[in-house]
Length: 58
Image 1 (tube, rainbow, N blue to C red):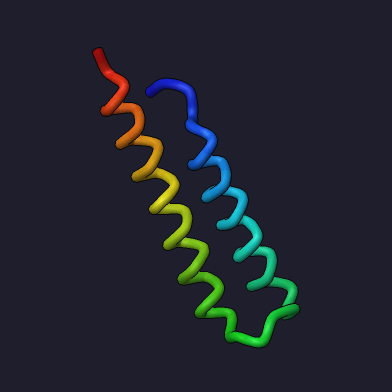
Image 2: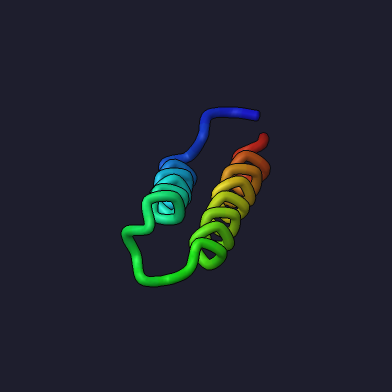
């Protein structure tokens, strides 16, 4: 596992923002939707990280 690509950082930060919205009741959707979006962005960030790592192998 090499360095995390910049795109994955964006996904991880976006996931943390969804988690923040889930626990602060700041948004208009339910907590369940925000938690689902948190996990979705977290999984996409991990997949992006692993695929970039695999593509850059020599």
